[in-house]
Length: 85
Image 1 (tube, helix red, strand yellow):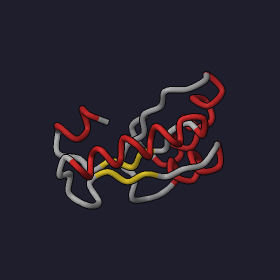
Image 2 (cartoon, rainbow, N blue to C red):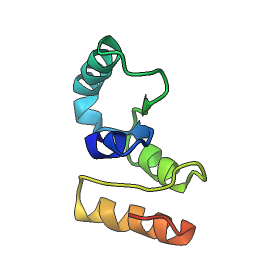
Image 3 (spheres, helix red, strand yellow):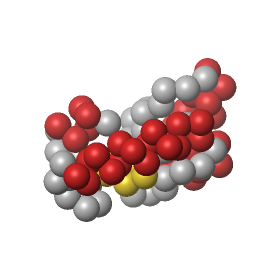
């Protein structure tokens, strides 16, 4: 996320469901630090949310830290949409 922001990109972040409270805390700190509204979006959810985001036309690239199975699933979606993965 930091690299994308440093290069001037907006970010949609879908953290692990097990890290939902941590993600909420990070978002609160970003807001306190003056991060412009909408620069970092947060989507909570599981596999379905990740797959939906990967398939959205407004999402230009996808990165993943997760399992090999999740990588293959999202890779297939991105390949079909010609998105960097």
